[in-house]
Amino acid sequence: MQKTMTRIFRRIISFITLLIGLTLFAGIVLIGVCMYFNAPPAVPVQAPALGLAGSEPRPGEDGIRPGNGNEVFIEVRKGESAQSVGRRLEHAGLIRSRHFWYFLCRFDREFIKSGTYLLETPASQMAIHRVLVSGKQLLQRVTIPEGVTLKKTAKILEDAGICTADEFLTAAASPEFISRYGVPNATLEGYLFPDTYLFPADYPAAQAVRAMADTFFEKLKAIDSAALGMSPGELNRRVIIASIVEREYRVDEEAPLMAGVFYNRLTIGMALQSCATVEYIITEIQGRPHPEVLYTRDTEIRDPYNTYIMPGLPPGPISAPGAVALNAAFYPAPSDYLYFRLTDAAAGRHYFSRTLDDHIRAGQLYVKGR
Image (cartoon, rainbow, N blue to C red):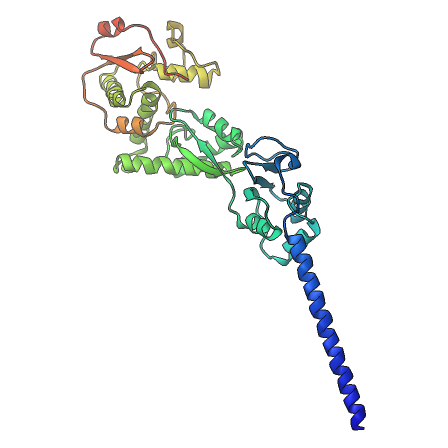
């Protein structure tokens, strides 16, 4: 009886040992398989392997595009499944197996987030997965120059792949934003600060507008802490002046003098006669090319924005004023000048005068360059 029990016990021990051995072997095999499929492909991915050329960080038709050196840009589209991303990664040669990618995505509870990402290759599947679930998208550097209009800003953002021009213009005219920022105009023209921004691709237009408007009011507060306490009408008056000065000045130290000229004219009820407002009508309202020189026929265009024939300020800002123009509008240089004229187009210098005769002798009318 004792010998029988001993044999049974030994068989149980042998079975358990075998089972443990098989389990360890299977575990080792599984780990090896996972390590193999997790590792980047044996052949490094190069730009030609992706079937693309160049280094512009904009996704191609398959959403994967080479960058500089070993960089690869990957776009995860809105609503795209992890399986779809896996197929594209495998097809581009960035991962060994889409099936392992499916397993990895199901095992991890973090969802892949849409956006454009920068990846350094070669990279393991786990490393790629961590990047795509992080939400840390590639940020496009977009520069909005001083003096541009809403339409031009919208086109710059569209060309950079941030948002469509139509979406941006719609957001900039949103009653919600108009009310939020207390702007007494139909759009946020003039209230979106020209600066360099970092936006991800396919960024919501409303968020881009909000970022630019917030920056405007932050800059405004830095220029004059009392500015945000002004009535909407008075603040709008300063912003309109700043937007005109922005399109007129070429040399920083002349901006306050120009602002002073406009305020002097408003004080005595004289027309502003700003070339910039006529240029705004020609390019933004009429959609014609930017003029090099203004003629009498241009200054006689019947439009509310034409400050040659309409008294007072135009209905709204005509451009996005930068810090220099805003500062000039809030701190104009005191003078008795009523006129200024561009006399040196290359240097951007203007001649300031007190009388019309002196102004006429200064020469031909010019407008600020494109």
